[in-house]
Length: 75
Image 1 (cartoon, rainbow, N blue to C red):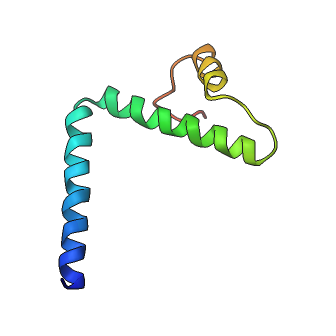
Image 2 (image 1 turned 30 degrees about the horizontal axis):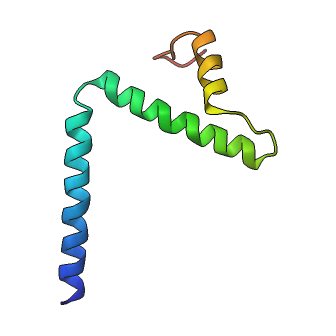
């Protein structure tokens, strides 16, 4: 088996994973929700790293209190 066939197999696996993701996220709102979940997890990990741990559930609560995310940047 050559390195090219390994790369092709890996590419096909990634493409299959992407197709599944796209099937589950057909609307802009589902994509936004998926990105929010990842972002909340990353913020939680970053704050833990900085010595100020916070739970994802707490971040969600704070986000809900501040209202929906603005589609336009603050000026």
